[in-house]
Image (cartoon, rainbow over all chains, first blue to last red; front, side, top):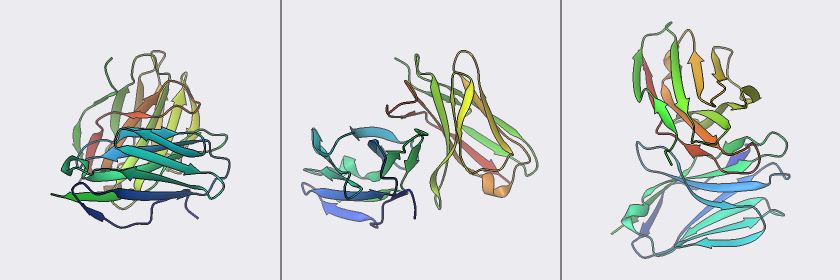
Length: 111
Length: 113
């Protein structure tokens, strides 16, 4: 079982719609969860961090964490063409503190 | 505050050669991590340094090594390059080894021919 899994294929959403991304992780003791955005040819950029169960909102982004079910999700409201990128889920494992990344989900916002 | 700086941005090397990549973390950050990113494997953890000590290591062969200096700057070295080492190498720093997020540099694009 992979440490962090993002199974959805490329996601195409019309401009103004909600994009929903999901991520599951294997280490039940994980404590820190992050979403990064990576534009083509660029490095990952932190957009959200979440540490406790529930929702965390930051502008048009909402991260949701459910430790019992071991998943974390990201909602992008009012999607804009500038949101077109690959979104990486990252989880900090228990004990060693290193960040493990999922392979990412590509989001394409269609004007 | 300046971000994470990686040099060089691009490198072309031949199989069998070695390469050294450099990373300067954000001022005040003592933890530096290195990742390899390829289209097929995504972001793969190489190692993490904190206060000049390697604290975590990923599943890469011994050809991949690194070090951290007293000013928190870090270098990674790849010896006996193979075609499969062609990748984007990303350095990231964070304030401590705890639960703070990583901040990435722009990366070094290595091409091995």
